[in-house]
Image 1 (spheres, rainbow, N blue to C red):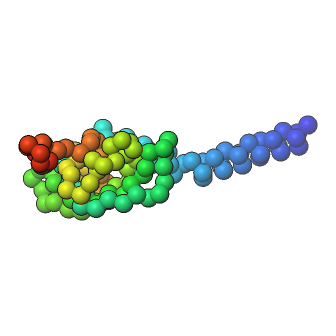
Image 2 (image 1 turned 45 degrees about the vertical axis):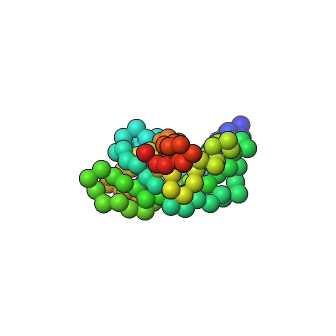
Image 3 (image 1 turned 90 degrees about the vertical axis):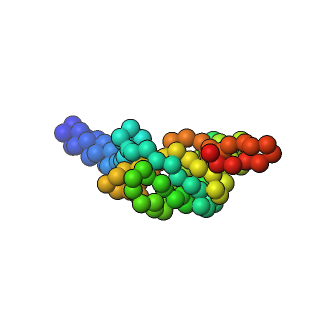
Length: 129
């Protein structure tokens, strides 16, 4: 009986180790992302480039965006984010659109999009506010 208990314990530890290796990095990234959303500094960013990754989540496309981040009182800089956008809103995510973002002042490359693109309609022309 002692040997079977040891075998089951080792199997359980092995299963937990496999799960930790498989899902651990994603859980850490999600935790860091939630911290950035909660504690990050506000800024606006301008989309300079956008590409579909070819991946979809629940039928919505995942994109990689190159942003110029405009933090208040600081120099602008480039950042890249990966984001899943609603299929119905994909056309709004285009070069020149502005997005509200959060960034980490200690690690400015850490940027999270916190809202949809902003546009201002003037007659038949769409302009950024």
